[in-house]
Length: 318
Ligand SMILES: [Zn+2]
Image 1 (cartoon, rainbow, N blue to C red):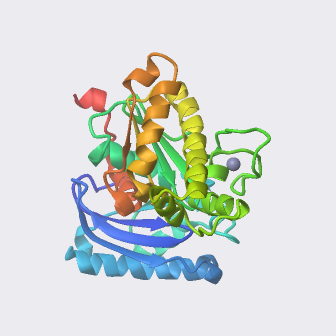
Image 2: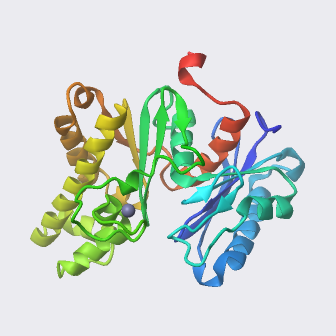
């Protein structure tokens, strides 16, 4: 793979949004475009949209196609990262064994890597973002679903086929809410994903159709919203404390749409994790927001290309 210096085209396939951008070796986004995912079109239609968006992103970046050697793609799992196949991602209904890597290679005639989107985001934060210089990092995205990525001792943890670190399916209540992502009960995702927060508000009879609306009402002091927000914070802290005890990270980075609630989420969660994790884990861990906001998917997908070409182990480089 040639790309250790040249910019890459990075693509992010989400259940709600597609994103594309050209990212250089310093993690700068030279272009960044977002479109709604028209999942009703099925895999062929969505990929057609994605490829068109990718071409636009290259055009807008001002980088010539001949300077782009590689393409990185991030997508929610389960997937086979080695073969570049999406197996059956719950956020993309009807997608079964879609060979995204081969189709993208065919379209753009360049090498392509595919990685779980949250794993990719962890790599991006570690390489260029909130976790630069950190050796032990956990990334958690609170989005349509909840995804996770882990850096252990400076190295990206991927599992046997790229599906490790599914932190959204850590159990916080084994008799709890059904989890649409995996079919079990009481997963973190069933409480703190954007979708689950909206559902819980609805079930509680509260008139908020999104996490953003709930957070705004909680901030304004609406009693029902405050109570439901507190429960959301408790569920997130419960999951994160287990995760912190498991990995002893120096840093937990939170990303995804739900984190637009900012300090309303971050401050109580940080406090709870520091208090709740076992000594000395809790004393040393910090919890921060993603450095890249909505660009994290694209930057992460680019980081994977650079990571595979030249793995960055902070310990070795320092
Ligand atoms: Zn689950």
